[in-house]
Length: 293
Image (cartoon, rainbow, N blue to C red; front, side):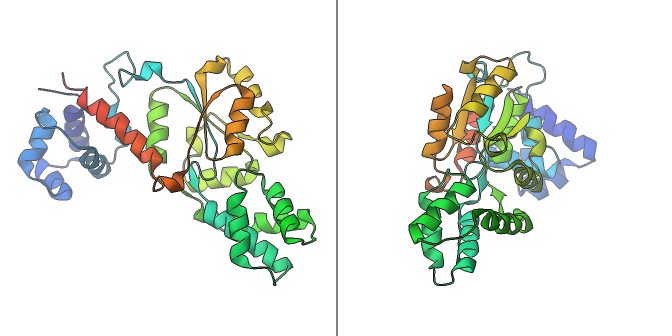
């Protein structure tokens, strides 16, 4: 049996001038197995295909997308939504611990008698709020008086100087590639300020995946006010049923529900921080199992 993955492996290998023998050493398998992959007589596991993609300096999507087909890359993809809108913090980017510690640093600088870990826990309990609302609520619970604007400036400086600590969850790049290669629109709509949001995206090298980046705070309509989502739907030219929102908090759920669009709310931290990796693996398993011709 033959499939389209094998010829692509062979072509990518030839383009780099790499022999089957050399590729087999990199992958830790036999030269015969490379030959079987290229001929399409041996099924390739997801993990092995990732290694091949890395060795041949190609994105995983290069081997998955069937360029000869006029249809989507999976038989089910026609049923997918057309527009995917993501929250950022704790959805695409692992920032809960860092952001909580940043708030704790700022507040304990104001009052050194405050317990650092307590502030982190309060932050954990209030996720989904704007950073300004977080400070207001935490200061209120701790009975501390301070100028919110001053605290926000300190918070911004710390986050800007440590933007590399905001790292992607496993599978984020793969899911974005999968969606992009299926001609889906991809957006970010979040309460984080846009200038810092862009720095986080650029630091993680995913800025180019998004068709539009929206800061609800900058527009003056912070979540769960649905204005930003409703406006996005109107400007997109798509039907409201074509949209789906991904977030991590109750505020995100209210945000999407208030806009009347479908939503998926999940906690990355209850899923070993790899929910997107699990999703993309399911997509790819289905793709590979159905590509033999």
